[in-house]
Length: 359
Image (cartoon, rainbow, N blue to C red; front, top):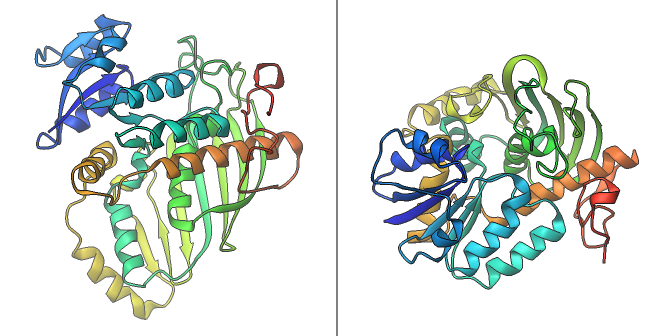
């Protein structure tokens, strides 16, 4: 049984629901938030979980095995490193950190610590991704060719009224960092490492510091291409994904926050392959979706060894892509990956006066 302290009662409430769905693997013992009234409301009378505002006590409590970091991005590195140094397993919400320099600092902390580390990318789990994995294993997809991603959500002034969203200092980025990051992780999961990026970003919807619209082109190391269209000014919230492989095309529905939670439309390019595809899809077991799937995979990795869990390497690849997108948008050029310490935005993509110099 993995005993958990959730740090932050915002998105932490969704994490709590997923842990509760896995009672054979996890037991949440603490919910830590500076606003203990909000935290208590999340628990809805559950007295088995301690509400506290004392993060230091949670980090040093030997009865806690895992620290789940659900805080604003500017706190992710500090709390993750402290938890690793305290010997805990660590889960960290996106974005894992705010720069490649921070990612490499976190890598050092992970290497020196006994616990596991997992950045949160829950879009990887559900019947749609289970289907893709099974079809890839059966050799029915062929090589990836082209992908299109839409992150078309609706975020108004009320969403940004909490004091940290939409700011460089605390949220650390806009729609590229906080909204489209999951779709971008998912395309990299199936299309592989990104080789180059072109991008244009804009702030068109709200009076905020960070971007709320984006048009992005990615080329992958295998030659495949992907386009990503992002806006926070849509009428409603939809995410739409289409993966075109050599032998089939997989198209999602429009569920905004869990696109893999419902089956996708999967059509063979050669109609003769469709019966084999349908047979595999019809035999798939029930999938664990979203956060539940994420935490189940992590529990299996902690207890039995590596498998389908999200890794630090996945998180670093995500931060590398974010860095390249901001660099491409600001420089107006195609940015080649991978990025090392000499990259212009290695120490961060915050505006120049707020960004540490490269060293």
